[in-house]
Length: 461
Image (cartoon, rainbow, N blue to C red; front, side, top):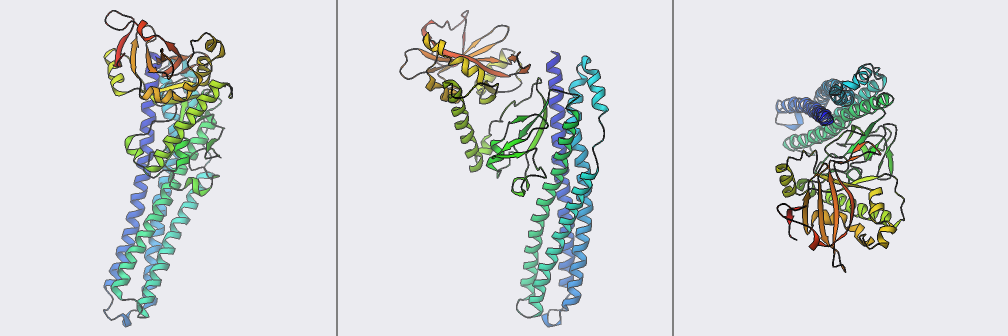
């Protein structure tokens, strides 16, 4: 399938580029930490050469040596970080160019688009130079502050207030504190160079690729920001801002965002084409490791409640359907294994739904015929997908699954129809696994078994 090859190429290239960013930041942090450790060793060696009698310590000479070593650290760390920022800038450009070029190469009809992508202008260097200067100054500031604290400890030794061995232990703690600050600076600023370049490249490519969009993807770190986790899966046009905790932020580590939203942020803004398939079209389901973090659990709970309230508001008519879509569940491993045996080529296990489908499912006309689910069930969609009474398979040109569940006060069963890799022709978007309708059904009339219309995937009738 041509589209499938294109989408695979796009996704694979995008994953490679994201790993490149991770490697660049890791390498820069290791280099800066190494420079600081070397400075700390040199200072400790200087102290070890001092006489055991603290009264014979010469503060001026020691202070001068400390300043020189930390100045060397600042220079070396600044060079390493500035070089990494330059590489990150190019990596940010490639995050947009390389995956799209990989996808377009699969489509002969898009050779013109491929040539246009190659002809995009270079991104202005001035902003990169400003970010590099800012980062180098901050790293030198780490060296200066570390030297000041060390000199203070040495002064206490010379005055007889602190023993030499206590000063050596204190210096180790001071250097560790400098390491933490330097690490945060490098992680933030090298990451900023990357995300700024990616944002600028997306803006440049918008006219050439009208379907180009960006998606906020959370970091997955153990101690992430809840607001950043809640923004996960948001999709915007390149010129539009994400809504992150009520703040308009163009991309992770946006220079215009408050420091509290950018320092140590590991989120990303992923390029995507509206009509191309990606592994997670919406919010990415939290992993068990992530849910070990109270913040991630809180974000997952908030997302679930928000999705339930959204579905209920659309079902009741309080909120107008505008074409918004959300991921509200995922295929169980047993269902995925069944589909694999059937030869279904899944891109993702995520299950989504759009507000138009919700409105159609709970529309008044259907309610009047007694075929619709009670409006109260709109809040249960995620729960039904996670804990159905049974899941049935129905093959065909577009294979689909029936999720069956019990409805309080009803003798009939509720059903949700999930089409697999279903394309929304109106928006020209591949909807992956998509709830297209739902209602009430008499379970006794469902033909299940060999030669019947349906086949039991999991659960019981």
